Image (cartoon, rainbow, N blue to C red; front, side):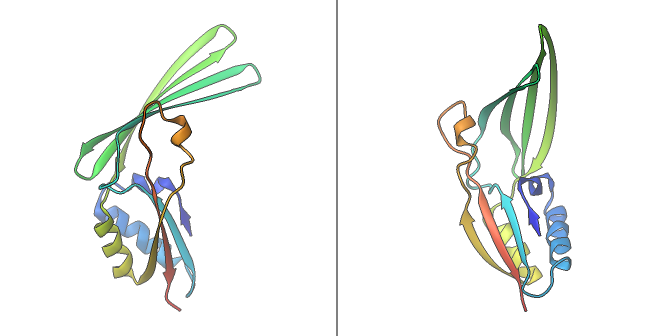
Length: 145
């Protein structure tokens, strides 16, 4: 079972625990659950810009990630969509959960996973507008045989 950064949509410890429980139930003994997450103690507020073009359409996306509480952050995205000389502007806001490593470890081990924690890659760093990083952690969790 793989849950990429979408695990961040779990905004409470209870919701995160339910997602972990669901992943566990879907695995056979020896199966692996991978989760890519941001940890509270590593989180950095940041801004990104992404661009794409094709078939007469140009899209620019600005993303701002900001802390909004002890266990949460908000991702705000603004989309500039150009078709010919026309421009449309869209925006959206996402409420996301943010938990510390100890909470993750407790939830995963309580469920019965053996856990390895690995540093995530730097795939998003090239889109950052300022210095810093976008630290992620990958939890590699194996269900007991």
